[in-house]
Image (cartoon, rainbow, N blue to C red; front, side):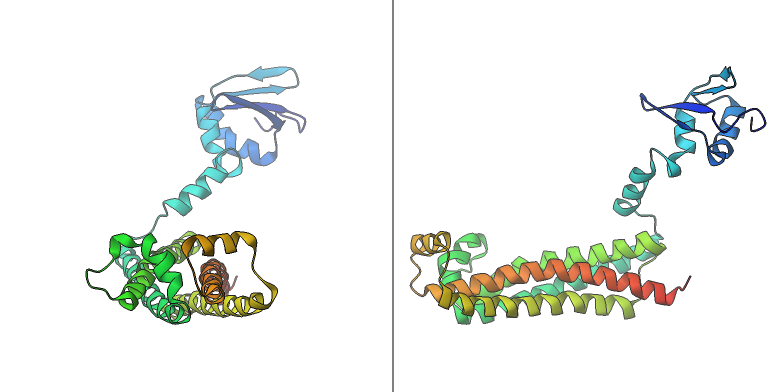
Length: 263
């Protein structure tokens, strides 16, 4: 075919009922030649007035990596990565470890914020997590339970994502000496952003709060509004820090992989 087709050959490929038209390159010819030779494609070729026809499902399959299926293929690799089954226990173990560490962090986090503003919990969080309320009247214990319930799943999901990223890039999970600092980055950034939220809350005490926040505190019957708002800023900043920390940990893993596998 390559001796009969000129550079100006037009090729129309039907892919899932959609027709596209483009110039056939040398790479296209190399990919499609065996398909056309078998006669099981749906490609219509016009070359110097001569044409031939066949059928397109196989052609679309042959050009997947360079055409219509490339994005879908990459998405499938991320959602359903290929990895040795022996790595599954390690993935589950890292997810469990991430859940445990995040839960402990949440308990300590909420013990501190409960000390700053008990009303943030008694007026707001206790109602949100009423299903987990202990039978006895132990508000500080309940605050710690809320901290665990609000964070354990985030840690597990973050660990799972880090494992998926490793598998997507190199078909195996990154070594623990790289995964451990990646976990540390998430927790450190969350802690630093929480401190930033606390500082922001102190600053807002002098500038005043938005009317929507004041309406919320009034509706909840909050007495110490500045303390309540400070804790609200701390919690919101912590969630933001978790997202930022996860992104930075993925960047860290990518750089560590490049150092470990140069070229």
